[in-house]
Length: 137
Image (tube, rainbow, N blue to C red; front, side, top):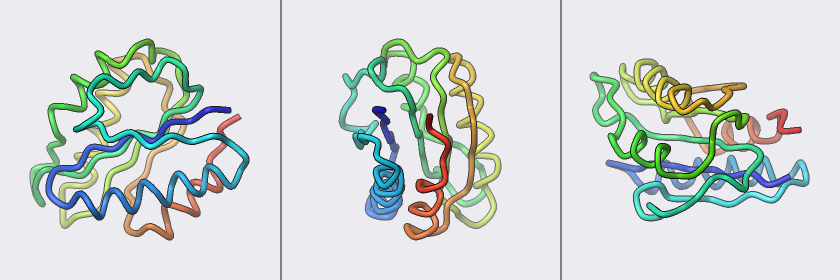
């Protein structure tokens, strides 16, 4: 099965990239083919061919819980994503991670994506363990 792990970085690109790679490694350990897509740079990427999509972002600030506006623009122009099973994640910060996760899930559900699971990730090891346990099939 083909899966995509899409991430949006704002402040600490290296941190979310490491978490994304670990999540992809965990999904690959289940025997799936995984592509990592940078939502900031790969603006013309199409998600139509993927059966499972993991979408992650980091909150823009420690308190507001806002996510980048590019998330909504990317999803609306990324092909047919309605009905796709997905996973939403945000990186942990001081206070805004829960609000950021809620906003990310709202953007995904607006496009018709079927959220199976969501979480706030602290470290690459946690991301890899979650990737190993995601029910993709």
